[in-house]
Image (tube, rainbow, N blue to C red):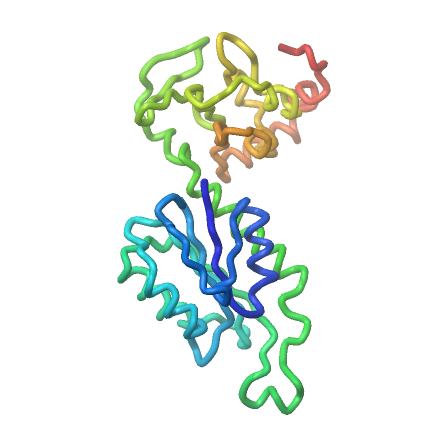
Length: 264
């Protein structure tokens, strides 16, 4: 997912956390960038909140972009403890340009305007490490939400391979039942998923298949290490609850975890 993030002002720390989580390009609008956004799948815009809205220079910058059909998220730093309607104006601009709002994030930030000049600024320590951690979590959830296989489980089963259901998503052939899905069309058979999975979910056949998804613990090591983003883990409370019950009342997960590397 090709991503670019535009920022201004003291949102830099937040923007950097998001950039790292999304493997994005980071651009300051102060450099007056002229970038063709047609190749980007996800675009972020953020600044400090000034006079109950995003920085006016950011608003003007966004107004000049072609965003039709693009997934867009907004972020900000603010003085007040609650966000309120501070994002409303920028979101209206994005929607008017045809963009699709897929998420928004805000945290408290340093402010040296209005009455706060008398004490040389307010929220001097913000954003802090906790804020940056939350920004990273937001970004990871966003990346997962927009994964190309996010809703493939709703597609009808087209057949089976080694008893694993096969579904189609456009030109892609996807193997998986309810939890672990692998796009066999984009998989390059590098074997990284086999090597990093602590529960030995994957096996190499004619292609790599998720053979034992009942043991998946939703750690996402396979997906995070897949060089082609061909793996998707369908996370859910019910699946997490099932994992917790199995771990508490049986030794199956422990036995799978302790299995030798040649398990398959």
